[in-house]
Image (cartoon, rainbow, N blue to C red; front, side):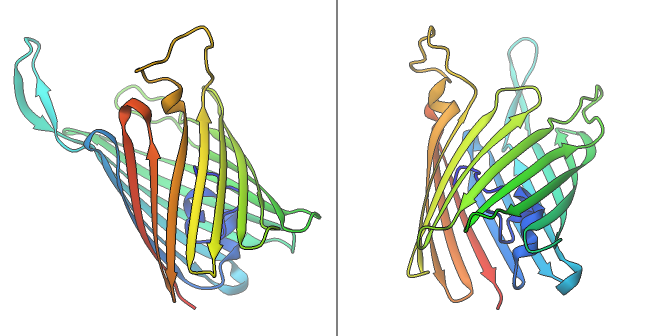
Length: 269
């Protein structure tokens, strides 16, 4: 759904998108995902959520990203041995229902980045909320991400704070429509649109579109990293059998080619 999940968050993945959505869970949920990314990069993701009754719902999400082997070159242009870069992040989320209309959540994020034999540790927090509007089947979501101290290798820098505003509508039978806007502090905003349709609660079809940046109408973008990357369509599908659900997503990045994601989720009754 191109990341348009801030207002729609209602499952275990809320620990990554908007922890306020964890409050919507009715039972324990677990999900695992593997993504074949660009240029040999891959990342794996695991999340678990546990509803603790009136106390609220707790969740944990773990992400691991690896660059694969990178060839080292010396100043004269001669190849040497290889090295790699990797990131690991842990999200600890909590969501609770304030009243029938409002849910709130918070996520504590711990992460470590390493390149070759150099590493750095950091932490941050996300704050989120979901509001059920007086309009039937319409929800609004807000999430502020990456609130924390400076981070970096040697020279530290502020984390990229992002404001996400979203709306989700479920008034069409078996369908979810979602739209949202992401505003990083220092770059152009991102528009994301998503749609999910379930057939007999067994087969899901998903589609999304996102656009980051802006087009310069005076520049020619053919065969370069321009709008073909900044704006793209995402396609996906899912199959649900009892407590198991298998999902797949495909996204095209123009000259950088495409990415694939496959995930397995378990929703215990």
